[in-house]
Picture 1: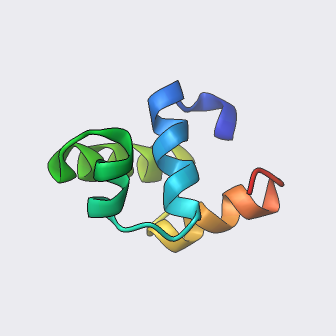
Picture 2 (picture 1 turned 30 degrees about the vertical axis):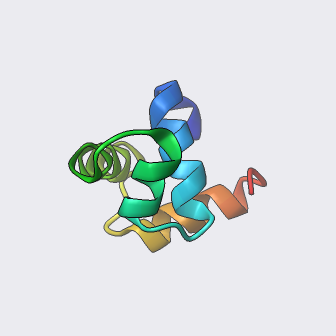
Picture 3 (picture 1 turned 90 degrees about the vertical axis):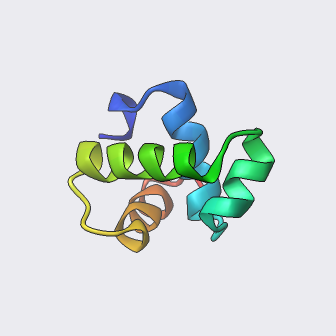
Length: 65
């Protein structure tokens, strides 16, 4: 399931799983907070998650964090 993500989506998800806010992710990846929100939305859709906590748990359960 995580393999369906584009490389940038994977980067955003990794930082999301570390507990970073959208603003922190944006600063860390040199992107706007609005872009981060778009990525998070796409990630949640692709992973069939209703919130970022579920997505973070998928990363943890997959052993990627």
